[in-house]
Amino acid sequence: MSFFEKKMKQAEGDAEKLIKDYMKLLDASTEAASIKQMARNAAPATSVGNRAADTHKSLFADLMSNAEKTSLLKSKTRQQIVEQFCIALWRKYIGDDSYAAMTKSLKLIQPPPRP
Image 1 (cartoon, rainbow, N blue to C red):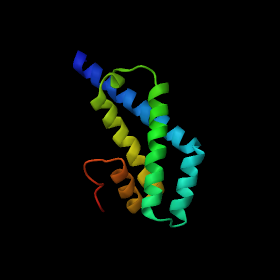
Image 2: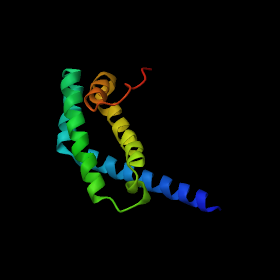
Image 3: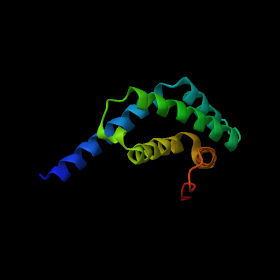
C-alpha cells in the first residue's frame, strides 16, 4: 500500500470516528431531544431549524475541542467536510423543511436536495 493510500485510509477512519462521536453527542443531548420533540409536534420549521443550528454549533465545537489530534483537524477544509456529514444527521430527526431552515441558518451555500 502506498503512502498516499495509507493516508487516505487513515483520514477515512478518523472522519468515521468523528462522525460516530458526534452521533453519540447528538443522542445524549437534552437540547437535541427537545428539538426532535418539537419537530414531532409540528412546530414551525424555522423555529426547529434555528434551534437545531445553534445546538449543532455547540455540539460540533465540543466534538472538535475533545477530539484526538488527527490530520483531519489540521485542515479547515477537512473539518468542514466532516461537519457537513454531521449536519446531515439532523435531517432524519427534524424533517426536510426544518433541515432546510437549519442549513439556511448555518449559511450553507445550497439547501439540501428535495426527494
